[in-house]
Amino acid sequence: MSDGVDASQRMIDGWMQQLQQTAARYQAMADRMQGQTVTERAKDGAVEVTVDAKGLLKNLVIAESAGGKRMAEVSAEVMRLVQKAQSRIPELLHQVATETLGSDGTGDKLVADAKSTFPEPPPEDPAAPEPDRLHHFGPEDTEAPPPPPRQQTPPPPPPRRRRPDPSDDDDDFGGSILS
Image (cartoon, rainbow, N blue to C red; front, top):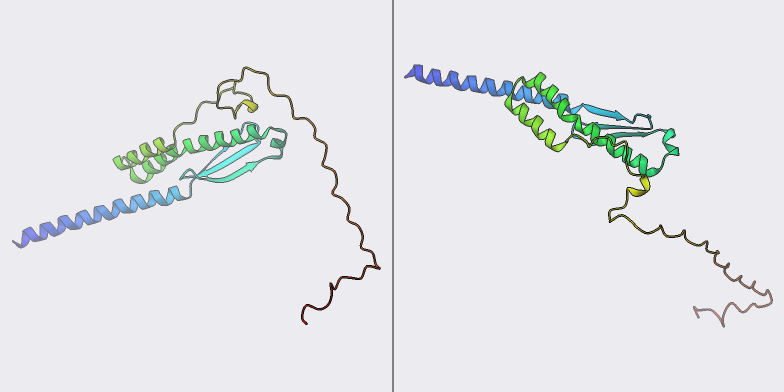
């Protein structure tokens, strides 16, 4: 009977050792992913974004050269670059998982989950709509745009106060309020 108990104990010890090794590999993967970032830069260098392994924006650099662009263009470029950087996270996770876990099915599941969270960004469209049109969500306007607002004249200045007459010394209104 002692051989059966010893064999069971060896089997449990083996499982425990295997679980500890697996947990250590997953912790190593988590530690490596923790410090990973992905940076994307616009072709003209006007915008640069950095996201962490969770897809959160960690750094945004807008160069002085972006000052000549329309804000709608700059904001669209920021969002496009964030999506592009986030879409690279599954690839990064796959690389780290392969190096730390090997060909573990759980690593593949983590990568698949990351791909559903951070899908590929839409392709760059060289014939993108004009920035003025980006904010329109309704049907296309068929009428001419409204005329610009008329210039309004500034309101008249407030009436000037009359200076108090020094001979008018009646500011005590009949005596002390304490009496």
